Image 1: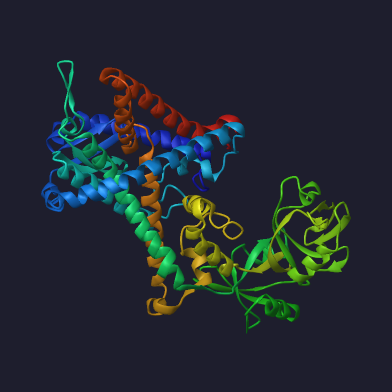
Image 2: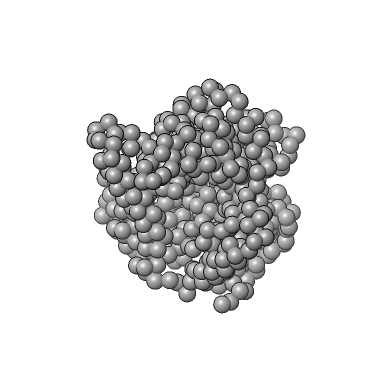
Length: 541
């Protein structure tokens, strides 16, 4: 295994297997230790539990306004049911799509990204992720504990669960009081009523949703409103083997100046580049600068960021990233020139497209109005010199899309869930971890945030990740599969419905069958979604 490069998916599978084996050995050692037992440390398989009774008195104090907690929890139960149906539908739809066409192994389904462990999952930042995860666990478990005391259920302990890392916090209620117990073949009544038990089990998810809602309202409201975009010229692409690559240009670098002249926009950059070639380059994060001399003639055109499957450009073999400089010999240095020429073409027309990657001959598809269609995604105007393509980072459109998420209904909600992985389409190609690293260089504080300076980005990142992880954890726990909260809630809800239709023993048997089947369906679906890319296409080396 070569540790000088990023481990491959196969390496990660070996790493995860080694971690699980190590945790199993640790768990066996823990369960065999009298000292661990005395100090309330135990293991279940590879997961180690550390328990304490400290803080139980605080739960009693917080639970004193019992009628208020009951009202809040009861009002939140429909939200939990809605989350249950939504996330179950998402999981089953994903499983169907993967079964129909298994995706290729990629970063999205890589073993390291299966669990949402900050720092291990490449899309979740280490610091903000762990802060958000800690908030999520504390909020979730304290809510369970408070509602246990509200419903008269004893809490035996609180603690943390470890799988090398702390993976969960927990409140340990007296299960006999919460669920009832078997005694001499009979099911003894629980301390909590069915309604009380549903409130206890729903409390963690409801609290996660409330925290997520508050954090996201602040993030998409006053915080995003206090961040404004900056026009920065960036290196959008570097052709392999080009002079630009040899000179040291790397995709993502920011152009600060051209031969001492400040870069204001793409037009001024193009004019300066026509007479000068000494660039002052930043690394994208503003942490360092270097001077790089380019060689060659500068050209201006429109940037292609992708091609449509089965479209004219795709059939002609055009790559997904290039600069279009002319159409049938007519220069297209701007978006207006490109659109004007294309509006005069016809479906089926043969078109010669000049690019920085050579010339392509395309037979156009057609639009509804009969004009020609190349079948490409245009990301804006760009400049090419020496094999490097320069473009204004679309910070303004990035913010506009981000601000539009809350008002976009279910589409916006789905986009929010996938935001750390997919980012903003057409702007960020490798997810969105917040306003940090390279991307923070394209924004600045404004309005009320001006005195804060760059600290506004800290606030934005904290709110984004506290909101996102609380939302995701709440939805996952909604899944109707025991031992998740949603599984127990579903069992009580479906059990109450069955008892209205069938005799008690028959209702209990049917409820148990439905709950078991659904748990099997959910966990097998999760496992299938994870393994299908590798079963269908093999493990990349």
